[in-house]
Image 1 (cartoon, each protein chain N blue to C red):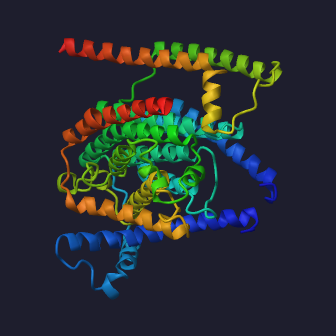
Image 2 (image 1 turned 180 degrees about the vertical axis):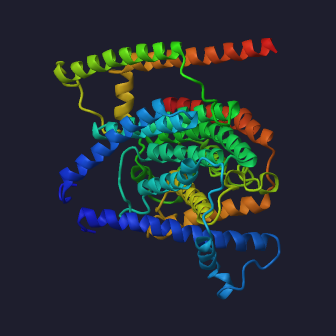
Image 3 (image 1 turned 135 degrees about the horizontal axis):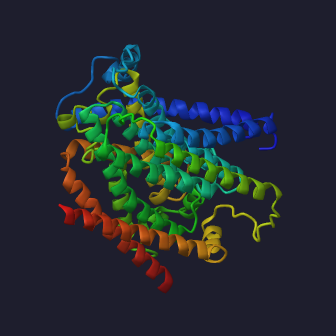
Length: 177
Length: 329
């Protein structure tokens, strides 16, 4: 790879493309009025994120981001939308409460953004205890069962809650009929 | 091969595009000829010897047609969908090693990459169907999602079973492990895991379903849904969907070859190389065409039942049994 001409330039441009995809996708998801386009924005954002993960030397995580978020989550959301309302949304006027909610959300987002940005720039970041894995099955297995076992278990609890919640909702729906 | 990296990259990009195009064109010919033979008629004969120039005539016809964007469609998504269908198929080909020397990239997570990008494919077809604003297209899009979600699970499970045995997701290493003679191929390694043929059959069925081929072509279902998600597409927009379908079949069959049939390893242990890979892959592609023209389309309910009630339990059982066998033996 080192004999590639203009390698730094290409790397910078690729990085900027991924960063732009992430930010642009997120903005598209938040700002568009059609819900199908906001899902497309979400998936664009996820692809951009996957690219950023790739830049951070974790190809496995990058591919999982695409596999799970684009391939499963976005597809499921679109499926839900398609079952619900295939047509244009009704353009409603801007009400008093929506302005209030928007201000509140904007303030919260600004605080959150300021906090994470400050933490990211000025915080002391210790070097990770292990070198990032090369994406081999062995390395992933070992890190999932040693360093990241807590996260692994918490994710399974989240999934359990999601399944139980889905079952509860489905039961309620059946009773109402 | 000591080409400088940029040229190698360029060659692979051009080569992949040419391969996808030529492959789609001539698989259509094989499909038409095959269909004709299965139905006792000659198939295309007029253009060129044995109709061999028919794909070129078809391509010219498709390209000279007007690209119609019907009023009322979501025009951005409608134009974007064919591109989004084509791109992941080409990305997948970047990871497929055709032989020891002929591979665009040798990466450790190649197997995950193929599945990650083929999952975009579902979304693209669905967006195309949704953006068309056509009842047939929307029904077809809904069918595609439920079908693909249902069949992705058993496919992943059998692939995990295989990865447990190989211990790597690098496609080249998986093929290297199958070096030697025919009984070293993963499909026939019954001494290590007698469940391998079951795994292969599940993989093959899921591949048919993931590429939306008959008997699982609920997405297109031309006798009930006109052309399914592609109803509103004209000219090359429709052509690109077809090219992507054939590219996906090739990716699926290439993956089956690499994972189960020993990739470019020869069955007698000597003269391994790219002809063996192509031979095995196209034999599988032919079997896909064979299945399409032999079996009628299944019902939508039996399609989902097959996946949720048979394939997922069986593949889970193979996964568990393989794990137990690996611990005990």
